[in-house]
Structures are given as C-alpha cells and as structure tokens.
Length: 312
Image 1 (cartoon, rainbow, N blue to C red):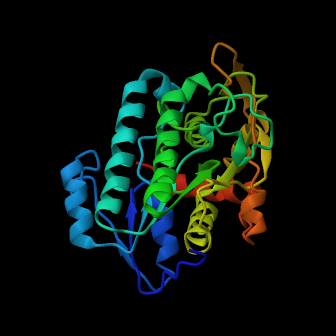
Image 2: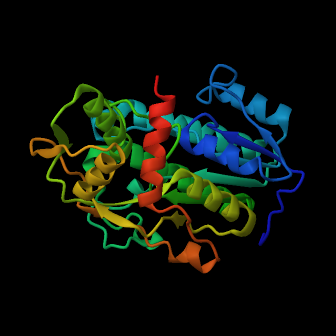
C-alpha cells in the first residue's frame, strides 16, 4: 500500500480521551471520515473478548492505537508491573482483534523511550535494540517494543498493513498535569501556576537541569500521524520529532516566562536526570514531505493559558 484514502472511511481512535487521542479526533474532524470512539466505561481495552466484540460490531476501516498507560519517571519507577502488563494487554487485544476482524490498516503509537539510553543522537530508527534501555522506564519501553514487533509480525506473516510511529516527548491540551505522575513539561506548567498562586520565590527542578530533550506539540504529532496513515507503509517504524532540542533548565525558564514569573530555579540533585540527551532523527518523515508547525516559544504560552482556563 502506498496511499490510504481516509475519505468516507470509519476510523477508530483507541484512547481518544488522552492527549494524543483527543488531538487525533480534532485533526480527523477536519476530514470527510467517520470517527469511532469508546470511553473506558464503554470498552475496557484489557478485556480481550470485549475488544474483539467492539471491533467486529463497528468494523472500522482503520485503527489508530493511541491508548496506553503513561506516566513520568516517578510513576514508572513505582508501578513497573502495571506499565508493562497493562500496555501489553492493550496492544495484544487491539492488534489481534484488528487481524481477526480482517482490518487491513492500523497505526500503532509507540514512544521514543524504546531506544537505548546511550543511543547516538539524533536517534535513527535503526538504533532500536542496539543497547540497554533507560532503567527508569524500561517496563513501558519493553511493552512499546513488543507492540511494534507485533505489527511487524502481522505484516510479515499475514500481509497486514500495520505501521508503527514513535513520537518524541509531547505536550499540549489534555496532558496529565498531576505532579505525582506527569511528564516534565506538564509538571512544570502545573508547578508554575501553583508558584504564581502561592507567591513562591523558588522553582524546584529535578536533577541537574542539563539533560537535553526534544518536544513536539500534540497537534503537530496528530497531523503527522494522519499524514503517515495516508502515505506510509513499511515494516520499519518511523520517528515523529520536531527537531527542536532544549535543556531542561531552559525549558523551565520558558514556562516561568509564560507564567510571568521570575522565580529562582533550585535543582534537586537527589532526583535522577534520566537519559542525558534524546533527540530523534526524523529525516525519514521529513523526506516524505511533512514538517512541524508549532514552535516551543508559541506552544508553551498557549498551553499555560489552556491549563489556567481548564484546570480542575
């Protein structure tokens, strides 16, 4: 397959209430297609029989598997069993049900954490399984690698057109802003708001602040996923990155500026830094003709304002 025309197609976005899933729904609403969704109350993705029944009843033309149990360093460290077992169950149930129901097109969303901790940067797709994983989230990474490999296996054994996309660190509306389990940028947004309300003069940052990270706005990611669903077909997973790299310290300063704060950054060196640098090589995606549009200097203030308006 070289082109999948989504016009008039039924597309199931599994995990539509999450940050990526909701962005995919927003993006697909601009297309002439039918969007299929199910809340967690309506469909438990860990229930094998329920997933198969849902797929066979709704008969989507394509599935985007954006559902996953996700969290930051602390959540991964405290709950490796759940991060491994629940994500494995979701992937097995949805991908196997797609095959059993003869659904030919599926897009599986992985994560940049699938790559070795000390992979050469920018990280190409070929770096997969060339070295040890980052220990702080290896359970989640192993689950995502398994999903990627399952898609490859279905393509090889049954000719299914299942592809895997590996997004970089994402941010945007409907992110998880819980300080106990959030990823770094969302945690910074929530902490900055809290600091502003409470009049705090210092802003705590885990680790040294020196690690380099790449971030992409979730609306850019959703656009890339729909582009790839329409134009990409290969057993090689494909990276989705912005190419925009930033130190954690500089990221904190961008968030503080968005909040109108001049707080002093205090580094908590008792906490881990995680991977020292993680920048994806997205040249394969760029060669297909897709590029991101939302820069951090625009996306972070917009997200801070969204958080202030929508916080609960």
